Length: 359
Image (tube, rainbow, N blue to C red; front, side, top):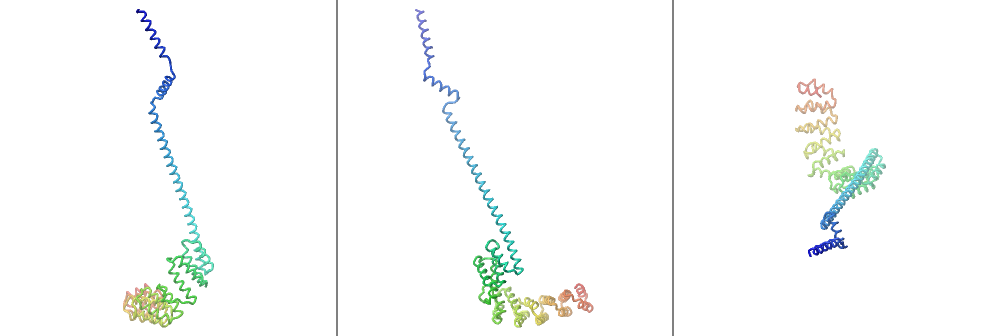
């Protein structure tokens, strides 16, 4: 009985061993999958996380590469714009240099009275445009005026007014327009001119064309409250007349009988533009005046006129030591050695003798 039980146990164990050795397809697949998982060293969920991280890294790298390409494109665009600007600046500089050369060439032609050539060159500058165009308009009109092309000159002037009403050349251009109209035989009415200097220019033309009509206008201007500079210019217009009436008006101002501020300027114009009668007026004012500034100025005017006799009289008879010295100095400027030598011999005052020697 005991032997029977042992035999049965052996068969049971053998049966289990045989069953364990039987491999089914499903078990094989399971084993293979498990083996692959073990071989890779990680479970399936960890693999998915790694794949997401790789995708993020690739996306960031692509974005950075795109930014770098954009930076390079922008830099190339900036370089392109800078190159264009540099080329444009070089072109403008060449144009400016050329314009300067043409302008200078036109000016030389104008100086040589080659008016026709000058007008053509200025016209070339006008067509090209640029910084010199306003000056080219003015000088073209001037060249046409000097060439006797009065209508063309006025047309050029009007083009300047229309195209550049605020031009720095406008004041000179208006004066030129007045001269052109006067040259055409169409004197401009001074009273119609708003600009004071244009009024004076018109008065100057009127003084030569119709003195009788110009006189009251000048007189009115000199008696007005206009600025001193304008009145001095009016006196200059008066001095250019050369008539006896003009000299009388100047002499009145020179004696201080009118506006004292105009006395010195009147004396100057009498000295520069007057004749024998004007020098007589200077002498009378010198003798009657107590103003050292006035007397010193007249001594200078005597020198300008080469009037040795009146200077010598002042050097000998003047009571003021400073004015005597001034007269002696002016004689020295004129080279009046004989007169000074004669004075030195007769002079007793040491200071005056030294002044004579210095002269």
